[in-house]
Length: 275
Image (tube, rainbow, N blue to C red; front, side, top):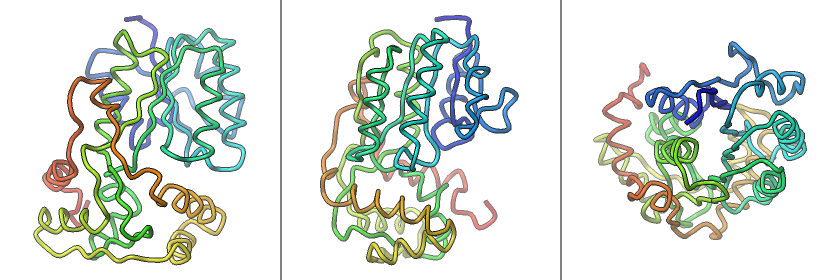
């Protein structure tokens, strides 16, 4: 281990906040990279990149809101150039399964000259408890496109554990960990688990991708809706309907089941109306 801090880009996000906390619980110094951090970081402001990289040894990098956004891959390339110039020793990238632009982002990391680990993730379970599906769940519905396509949904605490292991242990350089939950589930099956956990009916409502686009546009605008609908069409077409062993390879244990996620989130008050 080094005395230099580890940079967490996206430290206020779902995975970044967990990675930062877990690193600090191990006694590792963390530099939080976010717009309002002590040392600010902004993907839209390249002048913030070198200061946040100065003096750090390793970095966990996520691109908000997604690597599919126009210009994201180019910005990631420019950032890794700065990181290489600053002597970064290890970069861990969060990527997505089956996404064209995520694959491009991975190639940027592989050819950056910086030692790397890639964590390629399935769909987040916490989208139900912390993300855009929380409010529908509170209303008793789970509206999702994709029909009966199954997804090996993952608890992002597992993602954070993999990232922390990659940043603090030997043996992870050059690895690509495709991380998933332990089983395939349809969204209808996820709704059944949530119904049992919450003690009230959560109904899966199959919707068309056009309706999905309209729902996202209502809160985020057409531009955001275009990108996320494109990602949904791409990843909910069956290409990701398989589990992978990334969690086992990185941690030596099985990933958490969706039912365990739901019980933990419920106990923490995730679906309390006041939360």
